[in-house]
Length: 152
Image 1 (cartoon, one colour):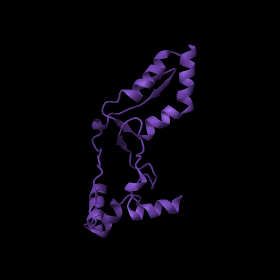
Image 2 (cartoon, rainbow, N blue to C red):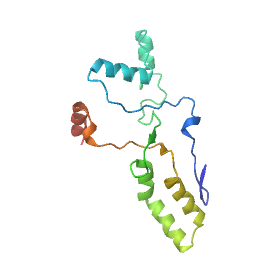
Image 3 (cartoon, one colour):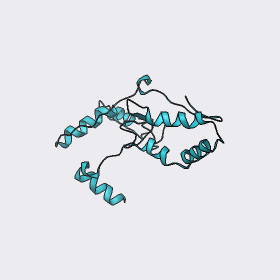
């Protein structure tokens, strides 16, 4: 638990303590579409032993208690604090700026600012829970590039 003072806390669990956590690393994918689909199927643990098992094991199906919510997969992102959305968002937030001002003016405990800055800068493993991945558009496949262009 990271204490931000004045009743504000951020609950943090270490990514290694989650028993069902799957770490999926990026790798250059095969040009074979069937091989890529098979890898995705295995990562998502989609059971193809029968039509019933397939239907019940795919994400966003009838047995999916999240009912297809976009937050179904909790992500853990590895990257420096200047490349990952969570620390970038915190640094750019009004909350962070207000804590900086209040701390500098002596209106709030300096420990609050020190704790927040330590969280952002002392992450030697560069592991950020509940964050987003940023990457260059140039790494998108042609299909992903088309989808991205249609969505914008």
